[in-house]
Amino acid sequence: MALRVGSVIRYEGEEYIILEYQHSHRGRGGATISLKVKNLRTGQVQTFTLRDTDKIEDVMVEKKPAVFSYIDGDYYHFLDSETYEDITFHKGDLGDMIYYLKEGLEVLILYADNRPVSIELPTYVELKVVEAPPGVRGNTVQGGSKPVKLETGLVVNVPLFIEEGDVIKVDTRTGEYIGRA
Image 1 (cartoon, one colour):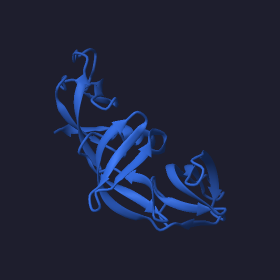
Image 2: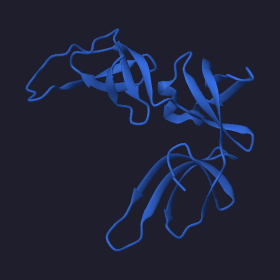
Image 3: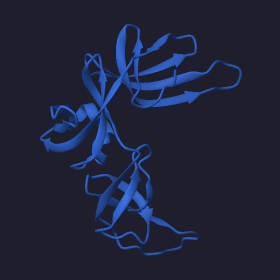
Image 4: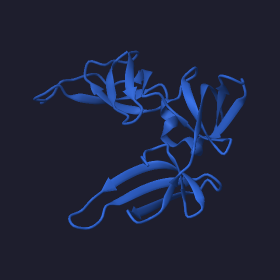
C-alpha cells in the first residue's frame, strides 16, 4: 500500500484521510511513519506514529472530475463535471489546498463510501501575483529571491524579476515557484 497525502486509510476501525506524511528509519530500529490525519466521520484532526507492525487498510476511493465554482463564507463550492451537482466543502476540510483554488480550476473530488471526502488538485496551478516588493539585488552571490503574495493569499518565494501582475506556475504539492506561465 502506498501512503501519501490525500490517501484514505482505515486504522482501528475508523477511516482517515492523510493530511501529512513522514517516513523515518533510524539505525537498527524499525521504521516509523508519522501521519497527520482527519477522521472522516468526526472531522477531528489527529497525529499518529505508526510502526511497521501496525495494521492499516487502504480504503477504495473513487475520483470524479469537478470544477471549482465559488466561495460562500467558509464554504467552497464545486460543480461535478458529469452530474452538474453542487458539492460543498468547509474551509477546514480542505486545509492548505484553499490557497491553490481559483474559479474555473479543474480538480478531482475523492469519494469514499459514496460520499465526497476531499479534493485532488492538479500538479501545477497558474496564479497571478498581487503584491510584490521591488526586486533589489543586494549582497547575493546567486540569483536571490523575494516573497510575493498571489491572488489566493498564498505567499511564495520567487526570483527577483517577478513583478506585480505576472502570472506564475506553482507546484501544489510543495508550494514552490516553478516558472512564469
